Image (cartoon, rainbow, N blue to C red):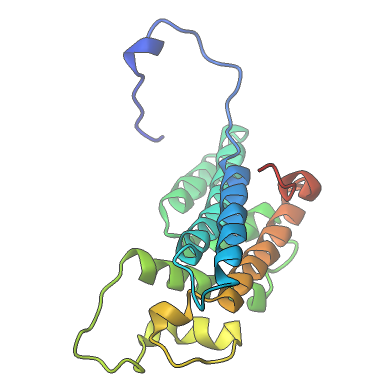
Length: 204
């Protein structure tokens, strides 16, 4: 059970009827808005720094959806082994929780496409490199971190003369980020019986 605190304002209040937030949809809307604004910026510029927050929030969308579904399953099961597995998964990083969470939601009835999960893991690695940026000032401009090789190869976008921070800020990569995220969200929404029309509705 996660440790919690209650702000003093709520100290005398009873339990609220609303239990589960849907931050995954909020994140999706945010990512789409970043992509829209970045796309406009990219009509006049080669790259847009707004692509970075779009990539970050796209990945957060998937993690939020998985965590929401884990919380729902945890709340409605008395199976101690299942509760223990859910608690463990909630603490895993995003790359490590994708496959076992999908298996749990699908009750082992189907497998997650290796292409879909491979693309998304590559996107998550790109997100991590933006969040935990570690420049190597002695490296050649054209020598990129090996950990980004999968993102470069899977995005299958035309190479340009730039370092990786510029290359991954371009419209083709932005579009690949959206396609990759939408693909994995679709399969998770399938196994959790999520409403795709409602999820992908533009609320901004």
